[in-house]
Amino acid sequence: MTVIQGQFEWDSEKNEINIKKHGFSFEEVLDVFDDHFAIEAIDRENSSFEETRYKIIGRLKTQIILFVVYTPKDGR
Image (cartoon, rainbow, N blue to C red; front, side, top):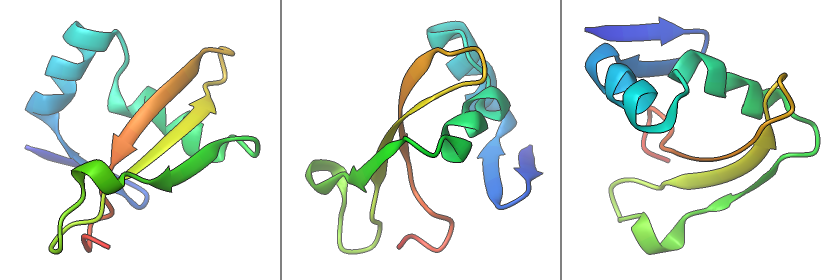
């Protein structure tokens, strides 16, 4: 099942795997995108012609710092 929250979309099964593996839901991770001090860059090593991946380091409301890799829905 696909979950959509604002401009973000993810697979609910992959979300459960992420919670078990890393201890955070994708919904919690969205705080990183609201961190004004976050650092974001293109993940050149893992991007392709069809899909550009990004990496961002930012803080959750709980003050935990996370490293997140994501792909915009349009692939760019």
